[in-house]
Length: 342
Image (cartoon, rainbow, N blue to C red):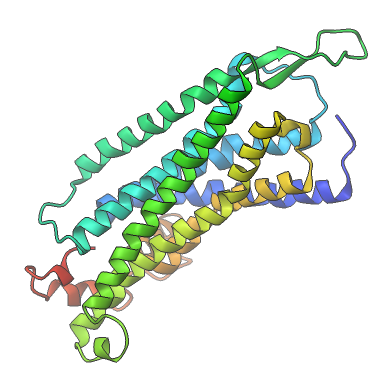
C-alpha cells in the first residue's frame, strides 16, 4: 500500500461520506415507492429502478474505485471474474439508469404531447424495467470479453508472479470500437433522445399558453395543473442534466484510455480521475434531493416513513398538511389532455 497524501485522505473521507449518504437515500427512495400506493405509477416505478442502480453504484462499485487510490501499485489478486465485474458493472448500472430515463421521457411525451389514451400499467412498466436491465447487460458483453486478469511483466520484489487487470487478448481496434460504441449507446444517443422528448413537452406546454400572463388568466384549476405537471417535467429534466454533467468525465476518460491503450488503474489517483470519481459519487446522491424538492407524493411518503420510526418527532399528516393540487386536479374534466394523470 502506497503512502497517501493529505489531499487524497481528505478526498477519500469526503467521497466516502457522500457514498454512505447515497446508500441511505436510495434505500429510502425504494422503500417510499414500494410502500406508497400513490407512487405505483410508471414514472415512479422507473425512478425506483434508477435508485437501485444508484444504490449498487454507491455501495459496491465506487468503493472499489476508492480502494484503487490507495492500492494502485498493488498486485491484482482478486481473480478473473472480479476483474471483468469491475469493468462491466459500472457500465451496466449507468446504462440501466439512462435507459430508464429514456423510457420515462417517452412515456411522458406519449401522455402529454401525443395524448395517447392507453397508458402504461405498473405491470407493463415492470416488464420494461426487466428489458432495460437485459439490454444494458447485452451492451456490456464486449467489455466483459475485453477485460481479464493477466500476468504482468513488472516483477515483484519477492519474485512472485505479478498479475494485473485490464484490456487483454483483444486488438486495439476492438478496444477502441468498444469504447466509442459505449460512448454512443450509453451516453450520447440516450441524452439526445431525452433532449428531443423534453423539448417536445416544453414546446407543447408553450403552445397551450402555460407560460407568462396567459397562464395566469386560466384560473385556479389550470394553475394547479400547470404547477404539478411542469414541476414533474422540471424534475426529470434536472435529473437528466445532472446525469449528463456527472458522467461526462467518465466517458471522456473511457475513450481516452481506449485510444491510448492505458488502464484507468494506472492513474487512479490522478486529479482528473479523482474528479471523475467524485462526480460519479455525486450522481448517486442528487436524485433524492430532487425528489424531495419537486415530488409532493414522495415528500408525503417520506414523511410517513419517518413517522414509523420517529412517531414523536414529526407531526402526523392531516388534510391541512397535504397539498391542494391533487384535489383541484381531480375536479377537472377527465377528457382533457391537460388533466391527464401525471
